[in-house]
Amino acid sequence: KADMFHTSSFLSINSMDSIKTQIKLANYAKKNDTDVSISLTGFYANFLAQPYKIDNEMRGFVEELIFEKKIVHLNDDELKMSTGKTDLREGMDSFIKTHDVEIVSVTLGKEGSAIATKDTYYFIESPVINNPSEIQKVGAGDAYAAGVNTGIIKGCHLTICGHIGSYFAGHKLNGEFGATDYKIDKKRLENIW
Image 1 (cartoon, helix red, strand yellow):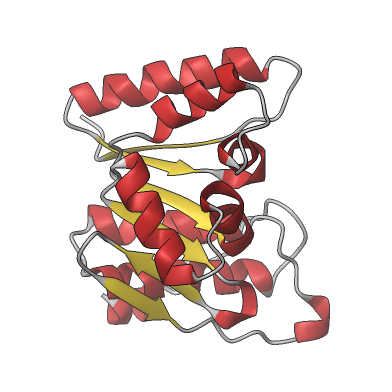
Image 2 (image 1 turned 90 degrees about the vertical axis):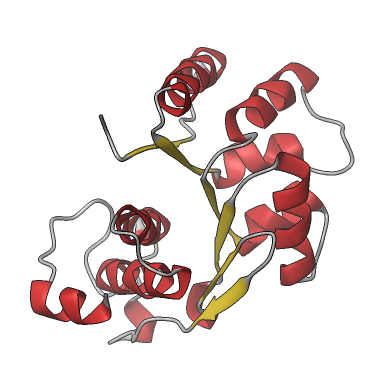
């Protein structure tokens, strides 16, 4: 049994087929007591946007994908887009209530990140950026989600999950463009949890 199933939106000509497959896999995982994690991304957040002017069939699929899942990862723009809320905390609360998810994590760029449940809210400071003029954001949200999910799997407190996510994202932000193979300092990571 897997500890967690994670998926993200796939933008393609066959996006409808992709989301249907994701729904099947996520529901199968949940049915088999595997936590489900979803990175919403702007492509899917767009279908939840207010007012409801977008493809209603795709909107229904996106709602089905995220409903009652363990954790949904978004950035601040995606949260605003999908809830219509400009206040971070209100947006997170609205997202949790509307979609009945257990945890929402929101990346805030250089401002840090936030993680919330229906009863708790935690702000996480951003990682140290070695050269702010050369930040490589592509993949940082995925790295953050991987770190948060690692903490959840290990049973860490949500603030620790956020710090692990920030540590992973910090490596990405300070690294090369796109998907990269970077080394994690295991001793430093163990000190986080």
